[in-house]
Image (cartoon, rainbow, N blue to C red):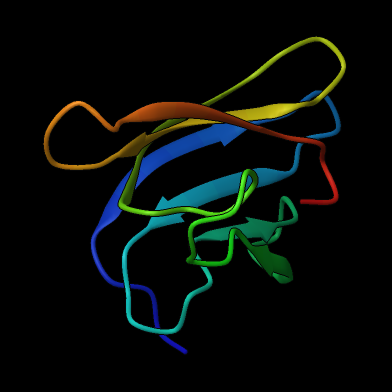
Length: 87
């Protein structure tokens, strides 16, 4: 599945590159190594606690390599999601 518009990038402490994007596949975050090889995809669409309801806007990480994104939803339902480095 090809990614649509990129909404955020971050590089964790192990030099993995995380890309948040919006497409119709349900996979919203891609993880690449320093050579650009795809390592993983995650961030399934849905209504669950760890699922993305809207558009994953922006990415950041902390010292433990947890990944954060804003799940942008119309109205007042936007929220911050936290994922470990495995999704």
